[in-house]
Length: 187
Image (cartoon, rainbow, N blue to C red):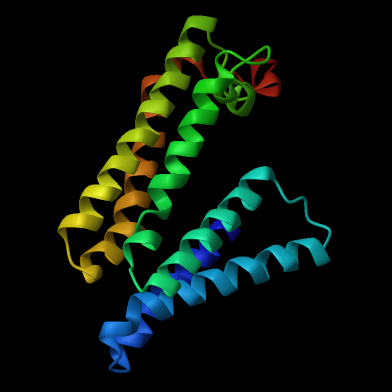
């Protein structure tokens, strides 16, 4: 849930700037809000001794690098490409996990939910790589071809909707491999 706080801040700042009559500056206000909230969130996690994963650091780094470029050059394409940069990085990590270590990243994340043969774990991992690359390419397409209003809606509803649909499709297709509840088997 905490991963959505910066996105909500971005969208809230964008909408607020537009409502207050700053439509031309809305993406820059939203970018500044995204940068601020992501940094505050990281600080909050640190102060609460919450585990900060590598993906949190990577996300904040990408937000700040592209955010600074957006504000310095006054070109909102930099911040619009943030999801694409992150998706490509994530796809690379998933793909790399096929060749480094004992098990791929998808298996590491989902082994407690699914009991599948190794070849299916490989296929699922490749499916995640393809999904992240597709989502990144789609983000670029929307960023380059549609208005900021449509892009901001797509960023929240489109990207999140695609991810949820992909997860649901996985569970539907792989339901035969769901791990059985140990207690339920004894009853």
